[in-house]
Length: 286
Image (tube, rainbow, N blue to C red; front, side, top):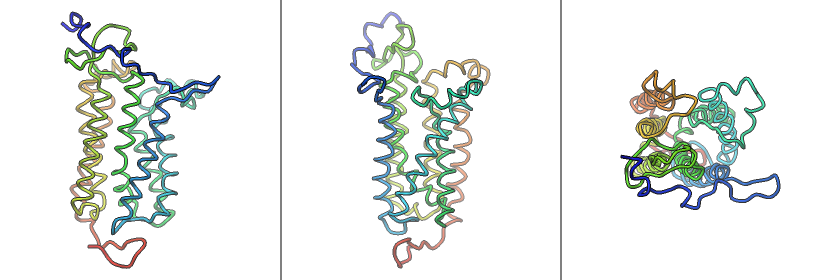
């Protein structure tokens, strides 16, 4: 049925999208690179808005330094996570690991790397590392949104066959089968919806005073969104046998600890609440 209605579906090539913005000689600027830069810059801007509110765990001067730690964690953690979780064969040719321009980053690895960076930063500045995580979590959906849009522009990480009217025929598949634009599903759930949820929790409640609650909501929210979307997404080519043998994609298995950890942080946040002293002020915040 899917093959019989190919003509009715959207052809990716008709969208006029290109993964490269421009090329000058050997140098090329790709949308994937811009998505990382945009996520970091917009997240930085939003984080400054958050720390300007009463009871922030850090001051403006801390944010500028924190961005460096977080960026380093995203790049190193994301790449190492991709190699370990999705492409362990790369370890046989170590130089490939450093070829970041060829693509290949793991969000779960990026989370681990960023968390390590935040902990090191918080200890160096004697800050509450869990509350710093809460604020970073609120700004993270920007990067997720831009990253998934870049995946779509690249025509990668496409979904399973579908006969939905919005299904798209991606040239990278090597066939004429229309598929779910799972990249856009993830951009909507992990980016827009998760941001809206965290925005409400931060600006319309006092959850930011319960250490770990916001980052717990982020972990549980992302884990749920990713777990669901993976049912509409094709598994990575090299992990198809793994998905068949275990019944779940690698991305879903990696979301399980996020769901457990997020649930734990949410459930135990109240007991960690204490009198909050702002970094740049004298008035306590309950």
